[in-house]
Length: 191
Image (cartoon, rainbow, N blue to C red; front, side):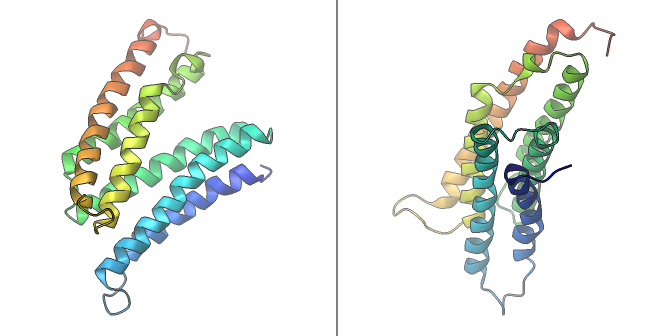
């Protein structure tokens, strides 16, 4: 497996997961709670930026690879699941919302794997509703990790909670969309 720049960014995203989770385990004497929020949010935001950057570079530089196409969504799912679990542990997100989002990520990943085995992976390619879901999800996670005032008059916890609810709704919508696309293949025993 040759390492190229997009794949290196994907690995960086995976390596940043224990960093942003670990921030909350630092003693308060080392870093005050507000500092932990800012640092964890910043590390997560950098990881989120690498998600966009690795795909952009792979396309722009012609460095797309089968391994990169496999690793990128794995890194995304690990990053989002880790953040949601941290937010639930901190009491900033409802467990059932996290379960909906994480469960959908696992189900759609499995669906895409199965469709690839059938040779029909393009049938469940990322749709616009999936991109909206990701935007709402990242907004929610960043706001809820920060949990500190950012924009005057806009409480970050409220912004994050509303975005998380929107992400959960879009999660269910996008899952229904992908299942509908896969429906014609459900009786196919060739996989």
